[in-house]
Amino acid sequence: MLPRFSVVTRCLSLAAVFAAGPAAALEFPLPPPGQDVVGQVSVIKAKYEDTFADLGEANDLGYLEMIAANPGVDAWLPGAGTEIVLPTRFILPPGPREGIVINLPEYRMYYYPKGQNVVYTYPIGIGREGWGSPVVQTKITGKIPNPTWTPPASIKAEHAADGDPLPNVVPAGPDNPLGPFKFTLATPGYLIHGSNKKFGIGMRTSHGCFRMYNFNVLELSKMVPVGTPVRIIDEPYKFGVSEGKVYLEAHTPLDLKGDPSNVDKHTAVINALLNRKDMSSSMQMNWDAVRDVVAAEDGMPVEIAVPQGGAVISSAPAALAPQQ
Image 1 (cartoon, rainbow, N blue to C red):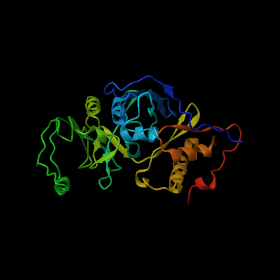
Image 2 (cartoon, one colour):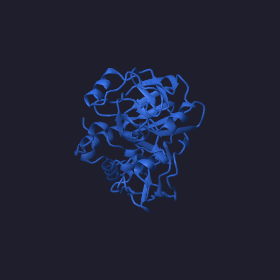
Image 3 (spheres, helix red, strand yellow):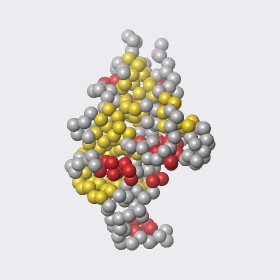
Image 4 (tube, one colour):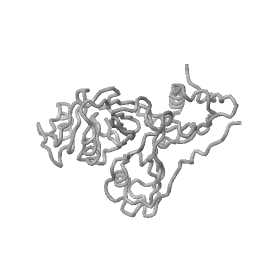
């Protein structure tokens, strides 16, 4: 008989934390080889004036992350004393732990400084529908403080059509949409930069570039050298191992937003699991937990399997079986 796990077991720690201005980046020691989970989820008590945008900025989280982790809570008026979940536990993205890794469905960047056993992670804004951010392997080619902005013709045309014409050049300053710093990428037309609209962090609001809180991009500017590799991925479902147990973290797939069907999502989860050769045959899976995590898409790692105790790993039910 398979072990049962509680999907609501999230390692929550109750913390009497209140929004008190921007926090430093979320920084975690890298787990040992073969381990993938960092951080802990926390719960805070909201003050009467708090909003998810304020709490996200104060705790290095994006707006949609806050929404997903707190279903049913009013994002603009949570209410004094309301317990708010801070989803600050993460499964590290698959692939090499080097340079910058951006996971689009997660609205989050990870930075692994060379020669240091730590990872920094930041919320980001990405390209909105019609202006999608690319999935590509690239690198940092330039670092420019106080950038000016020369709007491309396509964006100028869009603004003109909306009755909001743009100048040929926007000078550096508080009205510049690039914020106080920009990184150029080897992929033409795309940047990592600050923003004069913090509400867009953690959402699909840009024309394809990657927006950061200004205090985060300034911090990153001091650490990231030119030439740093940048890997941009599209992984809504991340699997990870911690202390011998398997965890799943689910985010809403960018191409399935608004789709009520879960069939394709389940197939994607199974295929992602099968790609993890290190955990495909030595774990007892709780498929009920997998279903619940996929349905919730709350962005928090949930235990879905433990080392099997002599039993053969169960096969996935038909609704979760990979399609050929």
